[in-house]
Length: 98
Image (cartoon, rainbow, N blue to C red):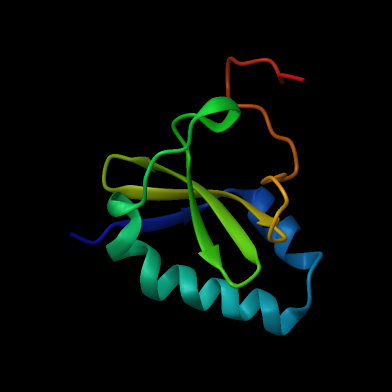
């Protein structure tokens, strides 16, 4: 089953910070692969419980599934051996944890 894709404004800001060709590759991968794979990707635990991550090269796309829509929340740089450290954001009704 394929899902619709929606983006938060923060994704545009994240993509502006990286090389234009890399940003285009990330968007292309999101549009081609994420709609069909979204529901098969495991849910994260810990600080990011309930969210999911999708690999696009050296970047990770943080997203959530709401009904039949995939809401892309952030795009984060991730190096092998590092922990996932996207730009901090707050979910509605939750204070940032430190």
